[in-house]
Structure formats: structure tokens, C-alpha cells
Amino acid sequence: MNAFGIFLTLAVFCAFSEIYKRKRAFYLNPVLLSILLIVLLLKAFDIGYGKYMDSAKILSFLLGPAVVSLAVPLYKQKDIIRTYLREIALGIVFGGTIAILTAFYTAKLLGASEDVLLSIAPKSITTAIAIGVSEKIGGIPALTAVLVILTGVLGNAAGVEILNFVGIRDRVARGLAMGVSSHGLGTARIILDDELSGAVSGLAMALNGIFTSLVLPYLLKIL
Amino acid sequence: MYKGLAIIFGFLFIGEELTAIFHLSIPGNVLGMILLTTALLLGAVKLEDVEKEAEFLVRNMSVMFIPPGVGVVLYLNLIKSQAVPIFTALLISFIITIITTAKLVEVLRR
Image 1 (spheres, rainbow over the protein chains, first blue to last red):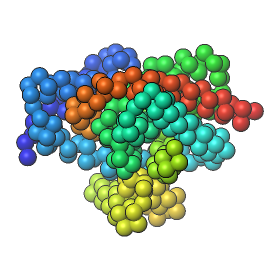
Image 2: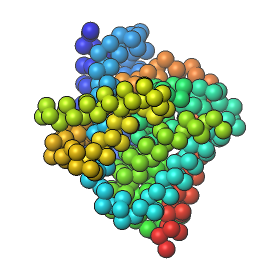
Image 3: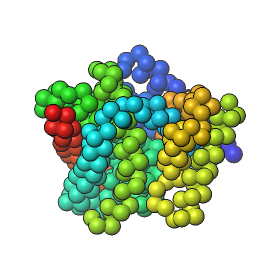
């Protein structure tokens, strides 16, 4: 094993995280910028993805235990789930399904190929779960990862403005819509406005990940 | 620390094994998460036994997306040739999802 990939990933992410700490702008998202810079570097120096992944795969392996660990924040929010059970359950079933259908059919109408459709379908759930779902349903996990992050950046950048524009004031509704539509990056934005909205958004993100991974394989059979 | 990690990796392992044995369409790590949540709710696993390790992994999840994301390097031509459907779908789906979900929950809350 060659340490090149893991070193490059940690160094680049560390640098972009420092920049993001100084200026918290959505376009400075450290994950997205790290991916772009590493892709550019691999291209520029003609280094294969295999050589990069040789040691970088240690980091992505940790997504497995990290997803299992989402059980802890989920468990700690159990009182909020109990209080808003009906809103959360219906909101996730509705929002999770709408997110899949609108993405799938828009891309299909515009002529996207089968592998792209399968990669785009899980784009609203948290990256770690989306990568696994994409793999299971025959999509391209790498493409899904990037589309998920772009969706998150969109939510982080414009989600609150859209909610204000259509006049949504209810804190539970705002949090749930953010979590379902733009997962962790949406949650990171709405939590700055309101703690309850942030907690509901984080919950919606985790639960939509579970909902989508359970439902999507069956939903695809009838689409 | 080892107790917490052993529990987390144990649930990951059980989740992976069960999805493989029963050919489940859910990823093994998601099943592991569901089982660990259930174990916490039933009191079979104590929160303080896994809390620190789990929160460390969750807090540092961002860096773990980078290597799979860099995999797009293999699909740049595919993305270029289908840029319009891909990015239009992302934008339209996001706007419809956030507005309709917020409206639905707002109505439910009245």
C-alpha cells in the first residue's frame, strides 16, 4: 500500500477546512473543493484513480462504522420524534418520495441514460448512505456522491431563501423540508437560524436515509 | 474506547451479514444503524458505552466522502455529455421537494 492517496486527501481537506473556518460561505464547501482539486491534480499529473485509492480507501471504509454511528444522534433525539411523530413520518414519506420522483423523471425526460438515472435517484439523502444505495441499485456511486454534495450545497446556499420566499414560518416545517431536501449541508445552514429547526432537520436527514434505502429498490421496479 | 468501537463494528458486521444472507436491498451499514438504534432504545446497549466513539465518527464523516467522490474522475465524459439532464434534474427536484414538503408539514401543524 502506498500512502499517497490518504496523505493527499487529508492535506487538501485540512487546507480547505482552514479556509472555510475563516469564511463560512457555501461556495467554499471543503468537501466539494477537495474533490475538485484532487481530480484536477490527478488529471494534471496523469495519476490513475487506482493509485490514489490504494490508501485513500481506508478513509472511505470508515463510512461503514460512521453510518452505524448515526444511531447515537438519532437515539438522542427520540423525544423530538415522539413530540412531532405525525409531521415527521408523513413529511419524510412524502418528501423522500417526491425527491426521488422529481429527480428521476426530470432527468429521464431530458434524455439521461439508465446508469445516470439510477445515480441521481438517491441524491437527497446523506452522502454516506447514498453511496451504499447507489451501489445496491446499480448506479455509479462516485457520481451519486458528487450529486449528493451538490444538492447539499444548493440547500445550504438557497434553502432558507426559498422557504422565506414562499412564506414558510413554522419551525418544524422549515427544518423538515431542509433535512429531506438537502441532508447534512441543509441541516448545517438551518441550525444557524433556529435550534428546533436544526434538530428536526438532522432527524429528517437520518430518517430519510433509512426510508429511501428501504423504498428506492422497490420504487424503481415500477418507474 | 475499544468497547465502543467493538460495538459499532459489531453492529456493522451483523448488518452486512444479515443483508448478505437474506439478500436484502438495504445497505448493511444502514441495517446496522437501525439495529443499534433499536438496541439503544431497548437498553441492550448503554448510550455512554458508544457515545464518544460514535460522535467522533459522525463528526468526521465529511473527509470520508472525498475518496468516493474523486471517483468522478472516471466519469467526466459521461457527466459532460449529460450535463443538461443531470443539473436540471438536481435543481428542479430540489426546489419542488423543499417547497412541497414545507407546505405539507405546515398544513399538518395547523
